[in-house]
Amino acid sequence: MLSFQDRLSRRSFLQVGTCGLSSLGLSQLMAASGENDPWRLFSGKTVIFLFQHGGPSQFETFDPKMSAPGSIRSMTGATSTNVPGTEFGGTMNQLAKHADKFTIVRSYQTGSSAHKIQPIVSPDSFGANIGSYLSRIIGTNNPGNGMPLNVAAFPNAVVEDEPGPFNTFGRFADAGPFSKGFEPFVPGTGGNFQEDLKLHIDRLRLDDRKTLLQSLDKIKRQVDADGSLEGLDKFQSQAFDVVMGGVSDAFDLSQENQKTIEGYDTGHLTRFDEWKDKNNKNHYKANSNSLGKLMLLARRLAERGCGFITITTSFVWDMHADQNNLGMVRGMDYVGSPFDHAVAAFIEDVEARGLQNDILLVATGEMGRTPNINARAGRDHWGGLTPLLLYGTGIPRGHIIGQSAKDGGTPATTPIRTPNLIATCLDTLLDIPQLRLRVDVPSEALKVITGAEPIAGLG
Image (cartoon, rainbow, N blue to C red; front, side, top):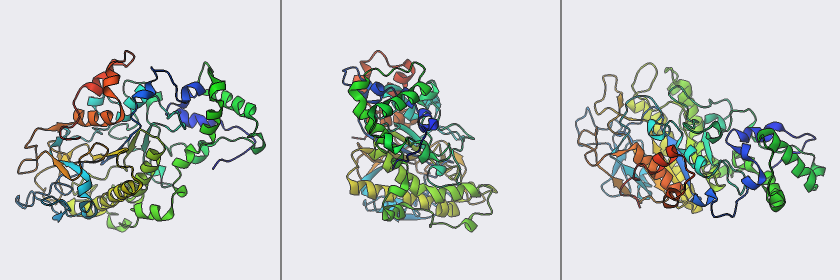
């Protein structure tokens, strides 16, 4: 689990410090007992936000409109689900078997047809990753084990040589109005990530509590200017457990059962030569190779106390059918199929582990696609309607919320908008009534957290 060397690795905790472990004062890291401790506001649950970058089609995913004209309805046909009367797009075969476990929102709209990264980072969040609000309110790390509370994971977190963040249209790890200390932790950006999370210290010195604590104090002073270790005696045993507790193991998929890894894996579903004619071919490869493993990583982090996890695999849902992008039919084969497989595997795994009341999965993109199919057999940008899947804690099972117009382009019922989705995520994570009573919450945070109602029809 840990490596033992004759030196202390400064990068060990400086790497974690990028997500806020600069507050590694042991009295701060461990759970406090005071009534004003912001940790009391945390529900202990996890939101996993699977961002479908590029803009997924509502028709070919969860609203196929098979009674509409051929120029509108799903190009991949439809598949019946295990919920009577509900159909999904023809590629969503595995999710169709689990439709009785999640909710589809057919009236969600981001209101933008631009390639930005709303709703995960948007004007409605003042330019901050949604998870940064959790970090700003309760802290950046789980006080029980040091786990970062806000993580953004990209293909290189699980597959060597695949790309990291695709920030052309916005920074996924942005903290908006808050300091950089509240940005999501991004694994895989600093080289050998597992090594960076290990404490390098001679094995013979492990039993020397004083030496270990002195080493921790040294790291603390490197990342925190005041070097304060108030309350050290009270928490020294817990400090030892934090450092030795295997935070790095949560990010290491080799620790997982091989059968489970194979169950999630999406790399075998497609072949590189199927999209090599497109300029975005490397994005498609990264998506196929990493999506399933990223969902497995998210489950592992949730089990270990991470509060908000952003998952995205690069820019693959922009199915215009042009020199850069696949069209709808090929696109759903090579992008939709890995999505269907990975999310279904995640749901099966979470259900088997009894975690469905501890995790909220959100899957959506920055926009949807046009009702009319273009001349090249693709669909173009559309801000009027965006597919949205919700699964897990607080989510009705087997439900459809809202309805779309006959052409699938706009809501036919009350629109669900990005502030409602943000409110749903933060309501899952935080005790909002208690939060309203606090006087130490920044005005920007309070405005976002309490500025809209969660999605109606949930709970």
